[in-house]
Length: 246
Image 1 (tube, rainbow, N blue to C red):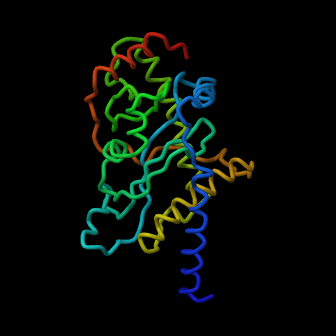
Image 2 (image 1 turned 180 degrees about the horizontal axis):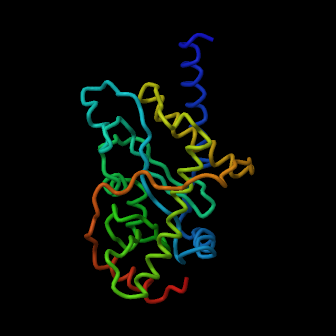
């Protein structure tokens, strides 16, 4: 097939798959998060309804008026994708419209998911790394823990939050196109979203993927540590520190 024909097929098929996103990428509604919390609690920290992080998907230069906005701190063009996953490594929320220069915390704080969590309708909370601000709905690690109970909290936090790192690893392993997407920007965003939809469908369908030899290392460590938080977030984290048993 000629390259223009392939490009048209990729554009049309990825756009069609994206229309299924609402059916396969779903964050629990308020009052429906108990199952999510139980699944995370069985292997890690109680009260968690999702793990959030950002990952950079390399792209070609978008060629827009400000292409340097898409150059990430590692000096390549990218889209910074914000994702939330459940305990089974399925995506429950995805944001694919920010350039590589955007900070993870900014992407989250301007998302509709953040607005929903801020409304206080959810019982549980997300886990994020030190690139996010501490809030009652997103708990971060303790910087320089001084007590054993704080270290226990950090260990549980790391163990549980590693789910999103494994999710990114499996996702990128299953869809090699995510190593570098070379389409136009709009099509690139559709390809990323489509791969997330297909990832969830693959997990739901039990499609096998040999991950025993995979090395799960987060390639997108926080650009800078966010040390601030509000009193409500500190109080909730302290409560978890005092009561955690894992």
